[in-house]
View 1 (cartoon, rainbow, N blue to C red):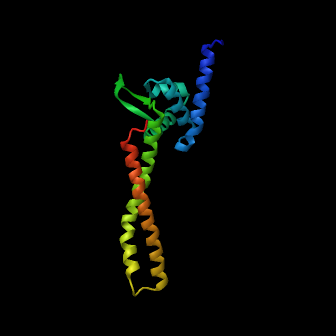
View 2 (view 1 turned 90 degrees about the horizontal axis):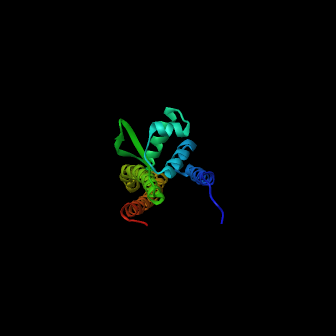
View 3 (view 1 turned 135 degrees about the vertical axis):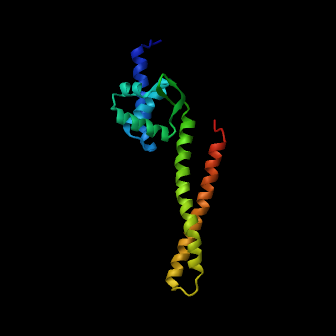
Length: 172
């Protein structure tokens, strides 16, 4: 039987932190934000911005940017209570929940941008497609774009249903 020291455990934690930080580029996070999230995940306690700044050795502006990025990605959240006058933040301890929150926020933005545009262009494309006094090549182009837009509309309706399902189900 081997014995474990505090140094062994710290080294293993650091390996796990590095592994998590290394995959966070998919989340579109800076390396600093990725390291901060992985540290907070294993720290498993609320932290103030000042505590984060000291631990990470980052400037106040870089720390604020990293925290804002992580909050926007829904990987950490600001607590409703404070430590004195200082705001407290905590990493979401549930990977599945974090990923689900991140993924749905990105997909909801994509859906919103494209469906808003589709609502704007579809009526005009239909109108142009139906014009009989238009040059044939223009009407064919409008028809082709209309078909692609309708296909996109179907896809984004399906994607919205997927997001709704992710938001409503407990996937554990």
